[in-house]
Amino acid sequence: MTTALKNAFEGSSFPSIRTVIMPNCAHEILRCCPHVESVTCNEDDGGKLASALVEAGCSTLQVARGFSLGPNHLKRFTKAKPPLRLVRVKDDEATVRALEAFPSLRIIEIECHEDRAMSSVMDLVEIAKNVLRSCAAHVPPPKPKKGRKAKDIPDTQENLSDLHSDPRTVKVRYYLSGRFRRYDVLQHTAVYFVPTKIDTFPL
Image (cartoon, rainbow, N blue to C red; front, side, top):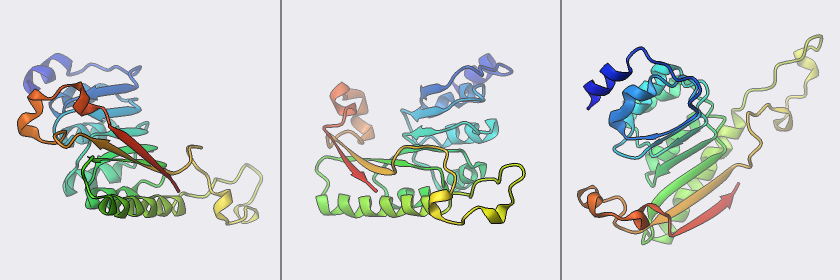
């Protein structure tokens, strides 16, 4: 499929496309969407989609869902510095901790089984909150306006620039326990892809 998509879409450009939902194997299409703002990977780990975003520049990417990137893909993605506002990841501590590399991040959504121990979930929520605090601390200061010297701008957290006005929040999305089992994914109905509950934890 990858070769067929490459042959069909190579050289094309769709600058008006802002939102895409696609499997990892459709990354050749994503290369043709230079101004995409929201990407959801609905199959596999999203590594190839991340590579395609990096090659396209990903300068407008604000929302990323369904990615489970390994160290190499994550390193490349981090260097590209997309202005991410919202990221949805699975309940993996290492993945959540890695998100502090994106200072513009405001919302972390964590997907987990509904039968996961609450103490374990709350530990992960606290880690995610600390990540958002770290992101807030690394937001660059605003550029001084013309005719105004940088020293005239107070160096306080309240005066730091920010790309978005959404409150920094951690959300936990609970799914039926069979949701993440790949071997029976073909037997899943829509109920497996709709969260049974969503908990919100403002920073």
